Length: 96
Image 1 (cartoon, helix red, strand yellow):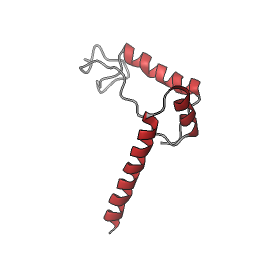
Image 2 (tube, rainbow, N blue to C red; image 1 turned 45 degrees about the vertical axis):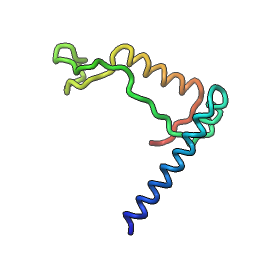
Image 3 (cartoon, helix red, strand yellow; image 1 turned 30 degrees about the horizontal axis):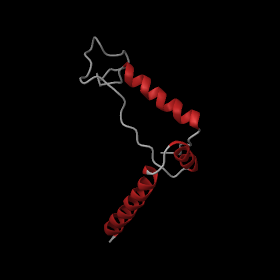
């Protein structure tokens, strides 16, 4: 019974997100920023640019001890630009 309730709640949430997404699709420019100021949206950003392959021990940044792919220069620049845009536009970010 509890699992069925969870599935139903999940379906309702997906439905509500779909409605909000459809509403956001119709917004742009000032009307989009105004809506974002009111809250209730989930901002989804894809990972910024990174090299196609993980770095080698010699090419990795010193703090990348697991040799994981990290942002390249374009990725760092675009990630910083996204953060600046959110801050400049005053878009509130709630707890995640």
